[in-house]
Length: 123
Image (cartoon, rainbow, N blue to C red):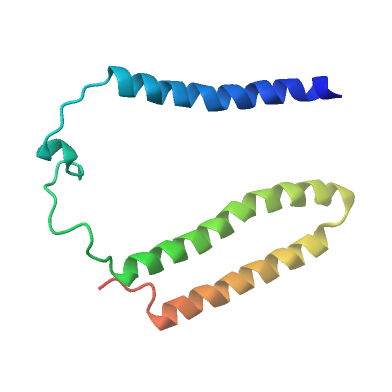
C-alpha cells in the first residue's frame, strides 16, 4: 500500500526542492547591486505618486466584490449546462430548469439591489 503513495511523495519532494533550489541559485549567482531606483516599485513606466501607505477608496472594493459575485455566477452556468444536457437525455430536466430560474432570480434581485443602492455608479 505504501508503494501506491510513492509517486505522490516523489512529486511532493520535487515540488518542494525545485523552487527552493532555484531561489538559492538566484540568491548566490544573481546581481547584488542595490540602489534607490531599483528599490522603488515599478508602476508600468509611470512614476510613483504619493506614499504606498495611503488608502484605496472603497469604490474599488465594491466593484471587485460585485465582479466576483457576478463572475462566480457566470462560472456556475457552464457546469449547470453540462448537467442539464445529461439530465435532458434522462428526463430530469424540469427540476434543473426550476433551480436555474431560482438561481438567476436571486442574482437578479442582488443586481437590482446593488443598482438601486448606487454600487454600480462610478464617480
